[in-house]
Image (cartoon, rainbow, N blue to C red; front, side, top):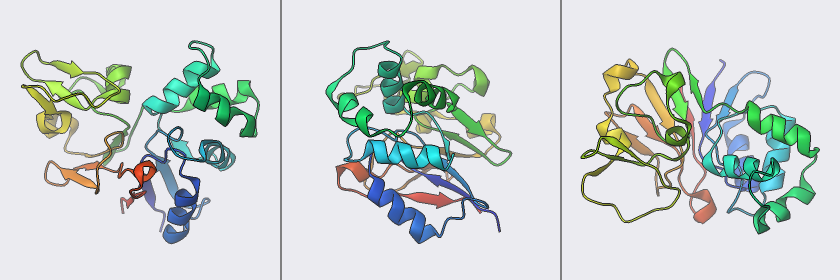
Length: 215
């Protein structure tokens, strides 16, 4: 049976990715494998992860760390130390790498599920019009001001800040399962009666790399 498999934030943890794929007995010709973003940074082997994912043409949602790396590739920001450590070990040229990152979607949608990296606007906007920064970075929603809290860091949580999934009207999204990464936790997260599933389990911090087989 063809399987749809989501995998949480890899963050340069190549060995753990290989272990997970082996344990899943993944068939690249049959299974649909979708990574939820943030392939690079923090872990020890970002280049190896990128080389593998590109070689196998795996579906990958763009994460905020991937987007930051892309901005350095495009010279929109200055190269930084981790970027310079990764680049010499990439097996493709800069132009192809840029084009590959640009081809990564911010969101994927199926009749049964939605997959993102960060969060979804709980107000129920049309998915294709959701702000890029929300899809990349959202963790909290400011309920007092009815607007997203957009930050790459883990700031002190203020009054009226709620996790985006606690504000979400699932009926707006047709009660589809929603898979996300970005927000590292000790275990896989289940919210909204198990329909909102967080798969970033902090592998790069010494945690685990987690996958979810939809079927």
